[in-house]
Image (cartoon, rainbow, N blue to C red; front, side):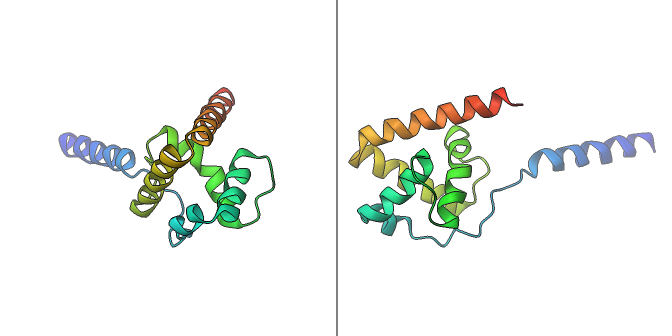
Length: 119
C-alpha cells in the first residue's frame, strides 16, 4: 500500500512539472506577416514593445508583456501558433532590420534582468 502511495505521489509531481502553463491563446489568430509587411503597423508594435509609445491595441500590449520571457525561454510557454509567430518575427527582424533586432534583444535581456531582480 505504501508503495502505491509513493507511485501516486510521483505521478502527481510529474504531472505538475509537465503541465506548464501556456500563454493565453486569444491572439493566436493575428496575421503577423501582415503586421511585418506594413511599416505603420510594425512600427506601432515595435514602439509599444520598446515602450517608446503607448500600445494602441490589446494584442500589442499582450505581445509586449510576454515577448521578453518568450524570447529568453525559447517560447517555453508558447502555443504552437505563438512559436510559429515568434519564429516569423525573429527571422524577419534578423534579416530585414538587424539594427532594430539588436535593440529588441537588448530590451529583452534588460526586461528579464529586471524580472529576475524582483523575484
